[in-house]
Length: 181
Image (cartoon, rainbow, N blue to C red; front, top):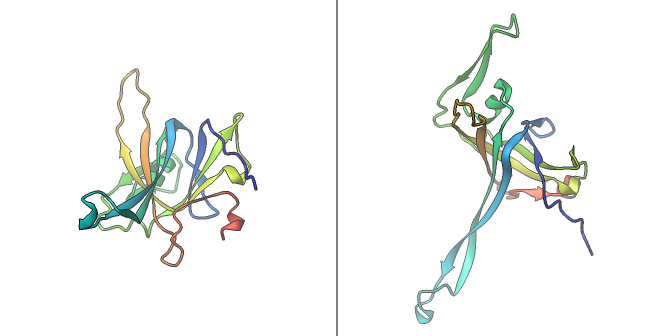
């Protein structure tokens, strides 16, 4: 049996938010990096020396790095823990982005769904087999803006994935989610 070929080159759309209410985080600059790393622990025996006799998988780390290049208060709020948009409600021009230190906040409890959709021929792929879903991801912001004439300001975020639940330890999936759920 042969399954679909995956897109091998090009940018992607990044969607983030509660399931079925994800929002587009806008354009990126410098690529979007999806990383899945298996972690293992060695099994050794005195009789076979210090090298691994076997290795056992003890965990998995899933991360997505993106540098957002279209800044807005809403987009910044979505990647900043402890961020709130304050407004007097009277006019859309009176607002502020307020960022507090969210000490003690559970990242897993506040995680949302992240979806990566490849852009092919200048259009977001509508083929769900191309999409990558991270059911629970939390953004870790890393913003360093340079104000000069040559560097583009981007807001970097590293989304850390978490298992869906103890009963369903899925970290991520690709393809038709109807087959998964």
